[in-house]
Length: 369
Image 1 (cartoon, rainbow, N blue to C red):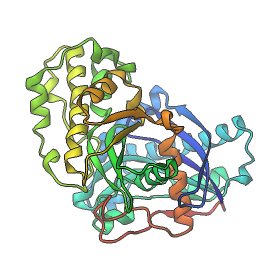
Image 2 (spheres, helix red, strand yellow; image 1 turned 90 degrees about the vertical axis):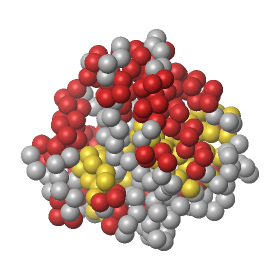
Image 3 (tube, helix red, strand yellow; image 1 turned 90 degrees about the horizontal axis):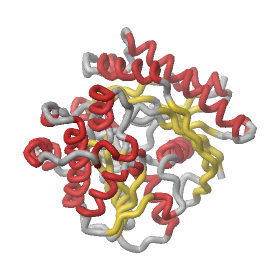
Image 4 (cartoon, one colour; image 1 turned 45 degrees about the vertical axis):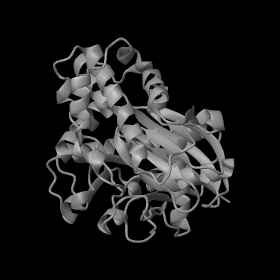
């Protein structure tokens, strides 16, 4: 068994999740402690600036490693914050750093355009390894994208390990709602997975731009509003939803222009319904209808979104904690798991998850020295 520490900073820009697992890189997974470390307002402002600046990067292999202007500052900040999170986590949990065999580092996605074979996650894996004194696996998406895959989602192989360990015999779907939402279908064999559409990103951005809040806490703003059916229909007309999987999205693939003229509460209610409807529509692309949906990620805390999903789904819905999983820590755990698979040269992406031609490993390893 390998002891791995995973790090995740998602497109919701809320902070860094840290988690420990012990695993053989296959079906044997023991979940350890996990904590979250929030970004402050200055961090989030810098990351938003980096997201905007990344839109101007040319989609060529050389540009993938370029860090012009604010991107260089953001990469240094991301690396430093992750090193601090590792240090603080290990101290708080009284874990000897030497007992950690490998660190899995996702970095911060600033642009993802797989159709152009272009994806950028800022964060210096080599510097992080030096800072924390442990080997770091990083840059998990690039090899898949270079080989013609979508480079996302990456977590499905971990979802499959958890579902199989739980002993489910019927089709199960794990829905992860971060900035972008994605699902994993598990029914034996390789998982089927793809991005379903928006997650929290449009809701968060609208709350920030119009109310100065980083999110719709608990879905309270959405609960106070009314869904505008005309705006919802316009949002759901996006051509992405008709595309067959595998498919993936950039955080900024969708626009909230359809709700710009609505009162804040109605705008957020409509965007929340947009996320719910797009997740449910995604089930039409699956081999079979699932018997159960397991909800993970930050969006699971949005009670209005959960209620809408319960009304729309053709099957039962549970949150991860009902199965003994940690919905908030699951992606950080997944990158710990992927780091172990990198050590063992096991595949992390598959034709049924990213569209790559054959199962392939991914990621680079930086030594601590």
